[in-house]
Amino acid sequence: MFRYTMVSVIAVITSFTVLGITVGLLQWSAFWGNITATAVATVPSYELNRKWAWGKRGKGHLWKEVAPFWGLSFAGLAFSTYAAVLAEDFAKHHHLARLSHTALVEGAVIGAFGILWVGKFIIFNKVLFVHRPQDLEPSLDGRTGIPG
View: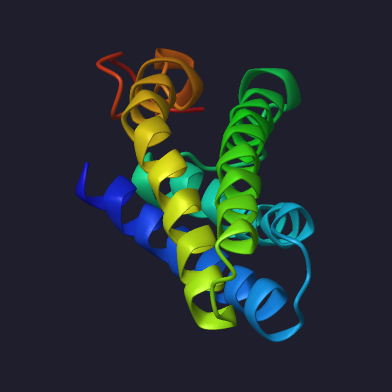
């Protein structure tokens, strides 16, 4: 849980940095800023979750790990983008200053991802990055004998 949390912190910092630059400085729409920020943050999130948080080694299986991870990331992207666009509409309707506008969009995005965070942990832990006996070294999986 600690490692999963630390990976999430890294992903949030990465995403917020990109979102702050795209929405705050470059004045992109919340829609495109959030898509860009989520896409950028998903790459280190996958690698760190797989290798550091769950200790998986070797090449990831496309259909058992990579596609489901990106599918969950896409669901998070859709939900967070919806929240970001709603926040942006609110900011525009109330004529908020750019800093307030950006903060509101970032708050909506973090709220959306926060809601999904627990569910993703359960899916990662129970489905995607499960250690199966065939994944373990012979000396670590309880089988006897000397590896050939």
